[in-house]
Length: 210
Image 1 (cartoon, helix red, strand yellow):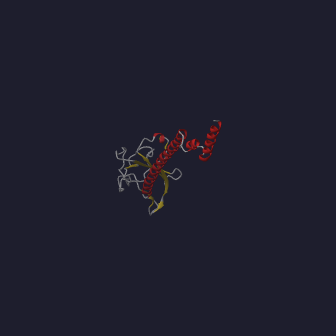
Image 2 (tube, rainbow, N blue to C red):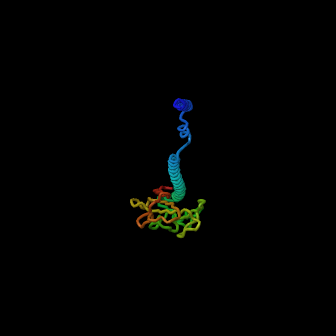
Image 3 (cartoon, rainbow, N blue to C red):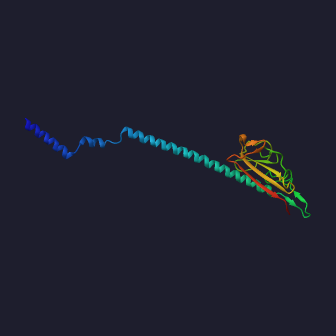
């Protein structure tokens, strides 16, 4: 009896040695545990969330850059138009100034406007007829006035001020382009600020002999 039991045990040990630890191998090949799956899922969710936030920030930045660039183009157009008006001396050396050209309409008209006349107070902070025009989504000018047209997208304002140190011969021209919206505290009684997606340019024009 003892001999038979010893023989059976030896056969079993021999079989295990030949085929290896079957139970352990089965566990190793069983795949990922539930804990490993949860950890991997959490890490993926965090990564996707960060990627989505980065995409949203990138989209807002691109839109703001596009808006600012377009506003700068509109501001430069008006500045060139204003600088093209007469501000110089005639053949006798007398000063001549264009005070009638209407640059608030397209094409500009030789009469009915303010030309390079000094602007009233705070024309950059409020809509002042003759010193503002409105632009639609296609870049078309909608004319001037104190009331914003319903289809306006941009508001373009400008000011013309004599330079204090040489008021008779030098003027400071400013152009501000904003979107039609509530600008909050950007407009104040002491001055007008520029918001991030707006454009404001300044130029000095001095009389020259024509």
